[in-house]
Length: 91
Image 1 (cartoon, rainbow, N blue to C red):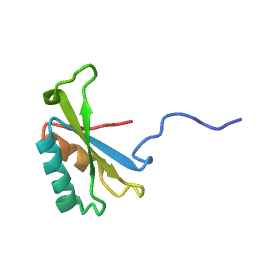
Image 2 (cartoon, one colour):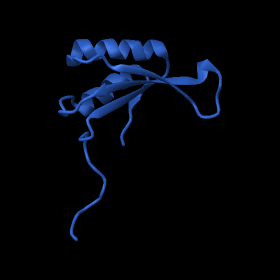
Image 3 (cartoon, rainbow, N blue to C red):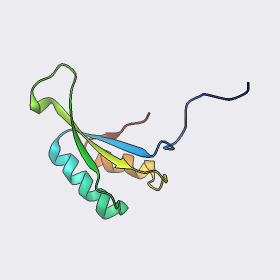
Image 4 (cartoon, rainbow, N blue to C red):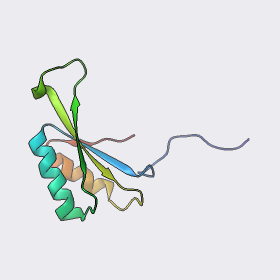
């Protein structure tokens, strides 16, 4: 058998996850995605409590963008997340 099961490069999986420090930043990024990227489907905001922390102040927020056609440029998403002290998760 000659099939390769190595890591998948790029964003072929059809989803981007931006990690932001707080809810305000996540909401602003979601708005910017609609304005700058023309994201048709509203991005999903998800509260991600840090492991072992119960305090709401220690939660990060995830902005999940569905991208089944790989239409969004990962470098531009990186730059947007960095504007708000966040980053784009890479799988």
